[in-house]
Every structure is written in C-alpha cells, then in structure tokens.
Length: 331
Image (cartoon, rainbow, N blue to C red; front, top):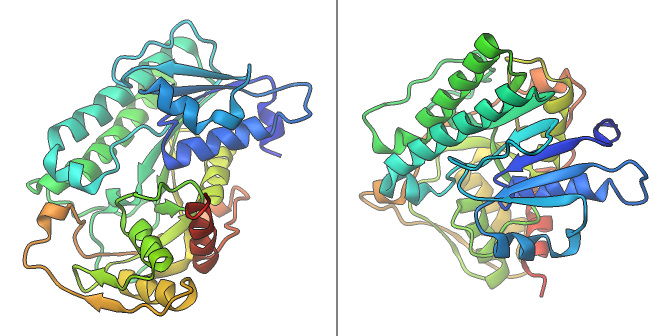
C-alpha cells in the first residue's frame, strides 16, 4: 500500500549503505519489478565502489548515487519528493574515541539536509533518531514520546544521544519556522538480514558465537533491558511515518514483545539459535567505559502512537536471530 503511493516519486536516502538504509532502498527498488510507474531512489553514500558492491543486484536506471560527505553534499540539482535521513555514527567505540566528530557529523549533516528540504519544498522528511534520547530509565514502565531524559551532558558517551536530541529539535525548528514537513522516528536497536558478519554490536557478537560454537562472554552482568526490531519492520515503520505520520511529531519504533535483558537475550540465543552447546559466561570488567557501552537501563518503549497509524511488527526475537544467522552464513 505504501509503496504504491511512491510511484513516480523520488526518495533520497542518506546512510544508504547502513543496515536500515540499504534495506529501505532494496524494498523501494523491488517494488519497481513489473511496474510501469517506478520509484526513483537517490542513495547518498561516501564510497561509490562499496555502494555499488552492496547494491550489485539492484543497479538500474532508477538507482542513482550521490557521493560525498553528508555535511557538504549538494543535491540542489536533483528533484526530490521525499527524504529519509539515516546517516549517523553507530559505533559505540567511536562515541568515546571521536565524540566531537560524532556530534558535528550529526548536526552539520542534518542541517545540510534540512536546508535542501527547505529550498526544494519536499513532500516529506523523516529523521531517523534513537531510543537513546530517553537517557537511562530505571524501571520497566512504558516510555512514550513525551517522556523526559536524564542524560548526563558531562559524559563523553552522551555525544551520541545528545546529538540525536539536538537534531530532533533542529528538525522541529525547521518545521515551525520554515514549514519543512519533518517527522522523527525513534528506533530501538534493529537487526536482521544484512548485518555484516564482523559488526561490532552485541547482537552480532551473539550471532557469531552461535555460528562458531563459542560461549557468549558478557563484560557486564547484562542487566540492561530494551526492545528490539526486525529490519523489515523498521522499513515498514519508516514508510508509515513518511507517508502517514503527522508533521512535527516523533514516533517510537520497536517490537514491544521482545523486551528483555541482554543476559536473557544471550541465554535465548545460546539455547534456541545455535546448533552447538554454548554457554553464557559473565566476565565483568572493572572499566567498561572504553567500550562505549551505554549506562545500564530499562528502555521499554511504548509504540501505540506508531501502531495507531496502522503499523505493526511481524517478526519476533528468535526469528530475528535465526534469519540474521542464516544470512550471515551465506557463502
């Protein structure tokens, strides 16, 4: 339904080679199969060769690459109807090793895209934000879009959530002052097919342990609790908000049924997703700050606002892992 409404429209996607960006682009291009009226996609990338490799099976007249740094690319000569802005630093280690770059890339890149949207009267603009804007909740209470935050601005690791919060406010300001039709999607941790085998995030490490028959070793007690989301469900959430979301509003995106602790998720992977017998071992480190871990939290997102637009999740946590593992082991 959503894809048919994008026929003969042009969608600019930043962060195009990232997990969510590439799955969104593939979904848009696959909708063109057999269609007379096609969706045109402009993929904003930094490395053309890498992008061409990622989209090898999707290279066509309807896919165009815009090459350059998101902070200074100039898409002014392109006719764009919709923008999905997903370019962002996602490495936890980079948050602590390159905090200034993390902040400035977020702010300058977002301002650059918003200026383009202002000057070119786009029909819709979705900024992909993060659950981390809510800080470190300490109860299992549901968190809706109006919840506040307790982020410590003096913590270097806060460069990521604070830059996301500032970008959200920048989006809201462009909507209020210039009428740019922005919407914000606050995504929980998302995974599924398309995750690189050597991805450094915890869900990928758990998958590698299952594939290789290694024990899962946690550097903390794994007490952090959060929801997760399947990649295709994230794509559906983006399209839902892009086309039916209310401008100037934020929406949580998560599978509420996946809410669990990291330790519980590790045990689930060890028990349900490995062909080998593997254990979950807790080997706490004295100083985990160098890993860029977020503080221990309980992030139980309420997605009623998004579901009221007609969106719903389709894949649970076990199947998310099984599908990701199957994809990661393809030769």
